[in-house]
Image (tube, rainbow, N blue to C red; front, side):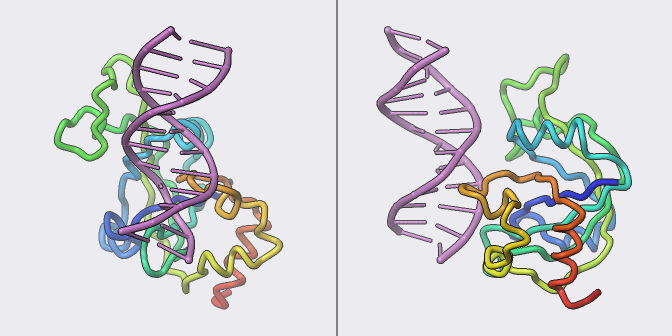
Length: 152
DNA sequence: GCCAACGTTGGC
DNA sequence: GCCAACGTTGGC
């Protein structure tokens, strides 16, 4: 089983929304590096840190579990969707999504704290740029972040 | 709102 | 294939 971190803007989709829906597709990944991980490496049963970006409380806010592996993200074909891709072909759809299931909220582990933690310095999150929306998390990083919540 | 970082596009 | 222009992400 592997660990991941998924980014979302809470104004669009938050951990609270996920809790209400219990299971939700993780659609709209439109970056090739992130897509490749979703398509090739994210497996059923993997655990995911949910991260809120571009908001007041930036950081890790909860845990989800992957319950369905990569399948075609149909939003790429829908002209009214924010995730519409006019170049996407039905024969070879470029974009995929997975389904995740809500596990639990976490007490916020803020980006500021993550940045100050030497054990987390290798996360893509704190590397220059910080633009990757799906990134791997090592077991050690996972344990460290959970410990920082004070809940475990 | 600003701006740095970085991905994508398109001309050559 | 190079690279300048442009668009987007995302923290502050």
